[in-house]
Image (cartoon, rainbow, N blue to C red; front, top):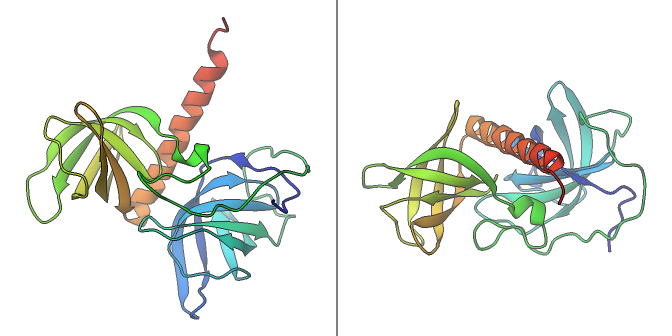
Amino acid sequence: MGRRSQPRIGSILPVRIWGTDHEGKSFCEHVCTVEISGKGSRLAGVRARLSVGDTIEIQYRNTQARFRIAWIAASTTAGTHVGVECLQPEKELWPITLPGEAPDTYSAPETCLHGEGRVKGDRRYRMRLPVSGKACVSKINGGEGVWAKLADLSVTGCRIETSHPLEVGDQVALRITVTETEFEATGVIRVCYPGPAQGIEFTSMSAASWRMLARLVARLEGIGTALRRNSPVG
């Protein structure tokens, strides 16, 4: 069971983290939150080699605070999930109203990513959001890019619909465009659905692309929440 005194809420926010890893090497990365509370957060996409008990700095917009590493999930090519505890709770880092203190039944995840870039036991993070966009997909080290319809998106991957499907395990370069947002990433074909759809897990992207993806997913999640709230009942 968990030891948290505050329940967390799902929120994807692009943040910058920096500090010193367990080998004494300095690092600075752009990652994103998956859940936040007044006293802690769950980060996704962390690549620095950290240990429980290490301290790091986290910055969101113009505010920063010091955090302690509380737990670390299994590492994958897409990075690691890390639970952090705020050492400066007087600083208001997050731009939303957070729930008050209450016990919860949280358990740190046994694994981070599996299958199609999904997190075991974490429905919020593995949830793909419907989107209208396109993706230029090309095999790494060969082949011209082919445009495909972008069907849904998350911070770990996407689903495309294409008349030129690739094989599971193929590594691909992606250029994804949604309205005025465009970013590049590399990925791997994880699953072929019935029909023309394929699931892709992101494996790497630049810091700038990561920030654009995190902001885009946060915007899509906000739109979905607003639509659900305004939908007629019955």
